[in-house]
Structure formats: structure tokens, C-alpha cells
Length: 152
Image (cartoon, rainbow, N blue to C red):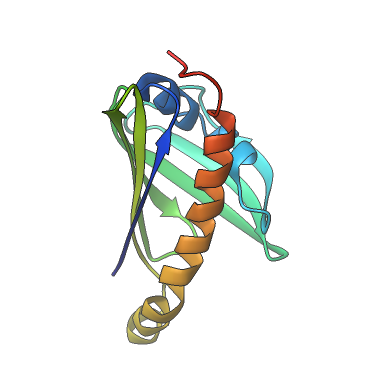
């Protein structure tokens, strides 16, 4: 299992950042350049147990993703897991904490590639760098969205 965590400070209250992230449609606004969002099917607010569906193109490969909101704690925590994705296991925690009038947003990902032992070894080699690049871009885009006066 690969464990990854990255945090960034945002100029917005946790409630606003939570509201943005609970709508999977907004992935279009923060997706890395290498990821094209082709289709999103979801509710506008996260509800525990509800599914959302994404169709994306990563490096020209079409991927279909079905996620489930595993845990929703208004303004502080969103956890999504994959039911269908390129991963044997995917659990993504979005953590929102008040910090100096703004918000510390932390993404924590637990994931594993398919393929048994070979997938685990390949994942340990490639996933940390892949996730680091992806979340650097996502956090940069999110900071741009919340760069004005503290949104409250």
C-alpha cells in the first residue's frame, strides 16, 4: 500500500473549500494538465454512500472511475473510495482545518496498483512521484481559486 499526504494553506474558510471539493464537477477546475475530464455524473453535494462517476483521459488513455463518498463531515472531512478505477485500492481523504483565518487543506491518499506482488512493487516505485506531481498541480490550481480576500 502506498500512503501519500500533501497540505496547502488557502485564503478561505474551511466551509467554502469543503463546498468546492464536495462537488466532483469541480475536478475540471483543478485537474492537472495531463488529465482531461470528459464526463462527470454526480450530485452537487457529497452524501455518504452515494456514488459518482468520472470519465477521464490520462496521457491519452480513457479511464472510467466510480467513486463512493465513504465519509462526509460537513466543513472538515470528505473521504472517497473507488469502486471501479485503475487502482486495486484507492481511499482519498480531503481534510479541511481552520488555520489563521484561512484553511489548511490536506489530501491523504492510500492506494495500490492491481497485479499482486508486481503491482505493489511497481506502485512503490512510481506512485509517490505521480501523486506528488498531481497534487502539486491540484493545490496550485486550488490556491488560485481561493487567492482573493478570505472567503467566508
